[in-house]
Length: 458
Image 1 (cartoon, rainbow, N blue to C red):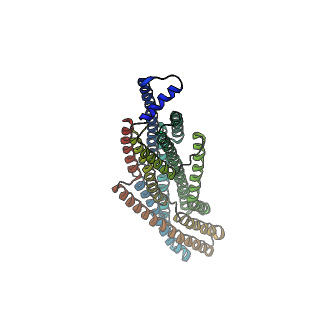
Image 2: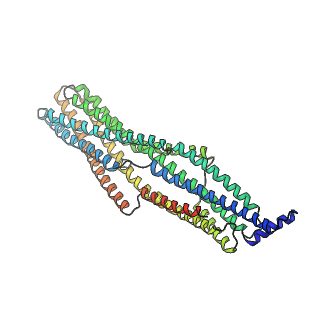
Image 3: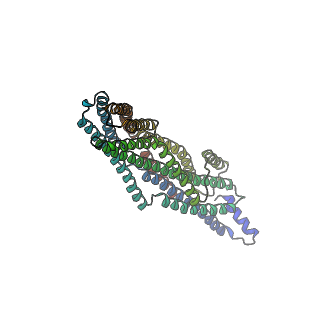
């Protein structure tokens, strides 16, 4: 506290008829300064703890298993290659059948169906494994306190304490409205309030984004499992149909359903993610009381006001206020740094979504496979008979279906390979430049440790 503030305390004591003398005034002075410093430090340290928790929450909750990209897309590429091999082999035999039934080789057709069965099993097993991995990770995160519900309660409890400290600090500052340092203390209070809002905004963004993406990802894995499982059953029935023709109808119907699932997977996964986003927003509003409208420009203006207030007078209610201002400036830059982090994360996740089939290629491929099932179903129920001319027409429909299916399977193979190589190359580039989301978060956590030391030294 400066000389004017000390004089003010003495004046107040004189007005109250209880002049304390210079020693007592200095004691009151020291008491106020200690309270002011202690409250400010506690607010900042609580903010650092919230910031640290928010970063760790994101780092752990959305952390992908090691080698997932290579493992999953590699398995999906294998499944797609098996499907393409089936389409090519079956197309040859169906072409023979529509020309001359005697040239159809049932053994080779059975082998082609076995290849399709194998590929579908690989695809279903891969998605089931990744879905199970996410479930196990969610249980582990819950045990560590990084599940959404526990995290919300943690943040809510700490925000309540921060709000109480802010209220105590404001009440303390209001007792010294006539002091020259009062404007600076008020300006600092606004910065602290904006920092509080920025912490809530960052956590809310992390929480909502993480829940949305995990829901989208898990729904994709579940739908992909269903698509491949139905494809495997359909291939098995198709093989049985070589000796029991009545199985060919249900086999092609299953191909229609599996193709429809593949075609609608991106849309259904997106809607699942949006629903999870809606639920997360409601849960946060219920836990935190209300949504926080944080504006980076308002934070920047508050920091500017604090700098201007500091230069307008030499007094200060807290001797180490420049360190507090330094922390405020860090928080301002942190907002911009956060935008960079979100941008990098969104890029990586966008590549993941494309690689997982959440793109225009997914509906196109699924639609082609569904068309193949429709042609096969039409051929069986419209032409299916023991009469040779009609059997040739049925094989003609099956042949046309495999032509369409070959295009779809070929697209799937090419897209999977391109997405796999593109994703690995991009992640390698980010890792080399130390711009992976996990790397950026780790860097920010390290900087928080440095800022914490600075604040504790106040």
